[in-house]
Length: 491
Image (cartoon, rainbow, N blue to C red; front, side, top):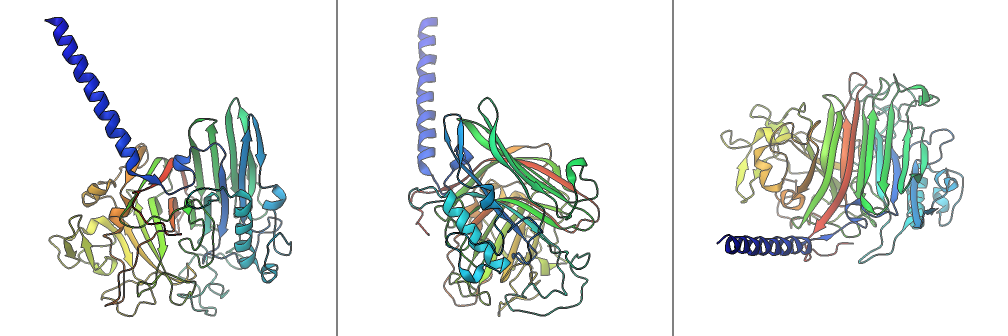
């Protein structure tokens, strides 16, 4: 009797094992990766750096630092590394030619940085199907804006100086690029690779003795050869002079515009994901949150299409950058409320496509939205409406900022404050395509719906005008963008 029972248990165990193995295999076959380095598991790393001022331009290079573009890209042969980018390449700055540089960009810091990114991309590029790819991108941005400089356009239109007050700035030079240091990737022990970028915005300061009273940024990457994922450790610190800083790790388009830019960029997305047919998988461990003003994005997606639904073409007067951001800092309040409809999107669409309008106070999920703002060049906005900051992108922009809420459960997003925050490290699988297909984005009445093709997907924080020095620290690994096989190729 016991033998027969044991055999039945064994048969049941084997059957279940076969079932789960088949299920797991089918699940893996269901999706293909949109990135060149699926799950960040490729030993031969490709990681770049870009620094921006308030309106996604350069303005002026930091003294002795060159153009704020760099890359760390290498191949492995046994236990030796062959770097594809030299420090001379990384140090290139205005006035210094390099292969392929457009002569018009030689003395222009904004255009030079654009061309330098393309050049570094050519050094790092990996041939692949269906398209080649270049690198993951570390993005660092300074939120200071000198309104007397006239450097930033207003919804794409060139404007002159205006009175300060709305934006932080300690005076002339507040939009400067940072000091930048690079530790090229190398072996630190048996089979372990490590490299880093770091620096500060306080020009002339030395942070080797500590970072009290100065800004600081750092990204360190580490991996054991042949094992697991690269782990990217981030640190961002604000200061009195620099209270608004942003640090993200991005998967950008490997060709064409990335979210927030109006020129050709390089990145990790060899296929562009399109709503609703993609998911994002990542592991995130937030060590320090960055204070109450830290708008930490579990996921931030960016794209660009015109108000009539047509794809962007580089015309900053009619292009509109579109962003959707899930903020997981539990100290971030919902500015959207029944008494502040101006901060809410006109409607919410449920997973079963039911429309709930923002004046339906019994059903609209107000606490699921931090803030909505509309593009400043839209002509048929539903009132009341809050217009997005017209200066911080080279063209008009639209923001849909989300907060953890039960309404997002079906998409795998956080459902309550604190999920995924400090002390709650998790691996997430987010149905970003499904959710982004249902979010409200403005479009001119009577025009064909825009294709929601996403050219940037990133994780990180925006410490938004802190009133004291704040520090955020987090690690990111296993990052992947997963497409259904039927997803059309968009590059």
